[in-house]
Image (cartoon, rainbow over all chains, first blue to last red; front, side, top):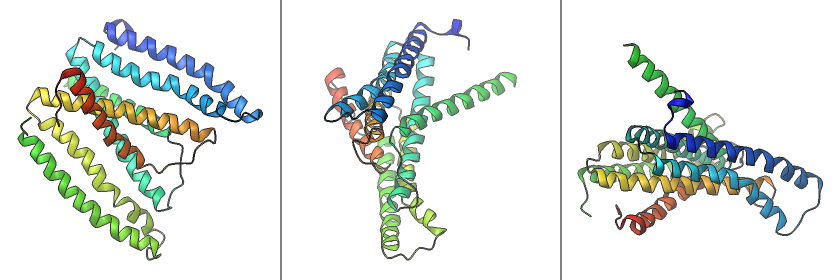
Length: 139
Length: 135
């Protein structure tokens, strides 16, 4: 689907995501540099960690806003299904990894990998939908 | 709110999966604690208790597909969306706090506990915004 085919809600969501990713790319490198090269202490590192999280939290908020803004029920249903599949698959992966960690078989990892895995599952399901749609279209 | 047939089936699946969880978890904990499980089988023993929990998510997906009451289904989907936003936000914040060396690493299954807690938040949000809750 080309950008010109996007619904108004999809366009607004895409713009929000691009701005948030830009903010993330601007905010994160200096925070990592400051943490690695200076002796910040007290509440400052906590504020730095939360500042790095805020654009990512904005992305989740943008998804919620998109779902409430979307007037096309078909697109809304597709998005809801994709989110449901990605969420359940991510929870499944988290619980399997969690037990592997708990029994000392695998190492502990940073929890921000969970949203990363969620995005990957969304992309994978989106690809499956795309190819399934093409196959149906060809049949 | 009256319970639908789909919700009753979901509850039964949950009960069976919880029993299975207990049946897998207890021997795994005992085996690891007393070093009874040989190298290669450790992965299998660690993954087995996770499978019934994975089954809970599949049961939830199946419930959504089976539920015929569109209003109740919409309430459940909203709960799950709240749970998703809450869980992913907590995971992101904790991940960065961990990355900056401020907190310890957490076992991955806490994500699932947060998700269920997030569903409770979603239920409260439904009650406040729509005046109805599926619970």
